[in-house]
Image (cartoon, rainbow over the protein chains, first blue to last red):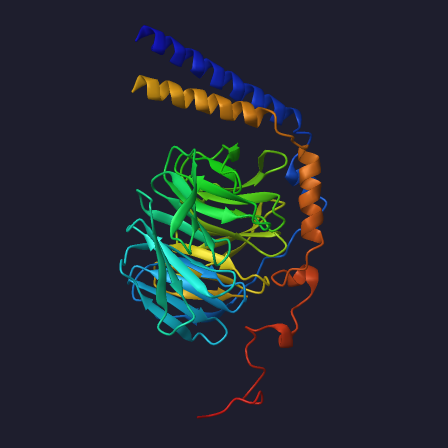
Length: 342
Length: 74
């Protein structure tokens, strides 16, 4: 017994020493800051975006939304127990899919546009085939021991999920089986984002860390610390070299994969509430963040200055996303509405 | 229980060792790379930088006036 206690103490000393050495390596490369490098850029004028479309139809809080790659359609999930596929140009509902479980927390659109998926407190990721009307269940992916917090299609055949059971999983939709498990987080995993080249993904969790994973090997290749509370949202920067986060600690941050560190923080003394969702504009210059205080703040990613506020919801902004052509931002809220801004 | 804890610490150590040796670039290199990407990618949500979006290219543009766009009254 004493022997194990000694070995535990020794292992702890070793991990602490390794963390110090990693920090030293990172600090040695901190020859400037992103803010300094960006100081030469023209400051942005106040961003003025207007609501162009309002998507009305859900009867309860909206928890998630995801654009289709076709830049026109999007899917939203609400605790009214419906998954709705919208045509954002006309505001028409293409599908209104009744869910087996109304406790939905996430939804996703497949890159091909042929499938949508969702899940939540049922611990299951349900994949729907949108080819028929009404849409039919194609697969139910069941293996997580906790709630499904996020899901993202890699293709029509593969999907990634994150869960309150502290793991992420890669699935083969055709066989319905789990292909790989990604375990390293020590808290509920709240969000994931696929890299533009689809070889990696980043996850954010209640252990206040964000982890980058190699999809082929299942290994965690990098861990980013800095946040002081749960990370609720992660999103890759459009170049794939960095990612943004949103946390209950009232800050959003930018982490760079190649520098292996945090490069910017988006926060303000009078912002005290948590961030639920983040998204970048197509160039990455703008970072949109949805907050518990019903607003969406627009940040200059490089200069870390707030350049706009989108105040148009009557309850928490729970989700948001920028279309693949960068034309529009959609915000979804607990007030049951989705708004398309441009 | 304690053995599990020890095992987890040893695994954690192994992962930290792997992380120690990854190739890192300087903050200036990473920052310059991000700035280059941002300033070379046209962005419809930044009309002050890239010019206003042409009405004919904007799927969310309000109709130009009256019903001159060919809409029908059903």
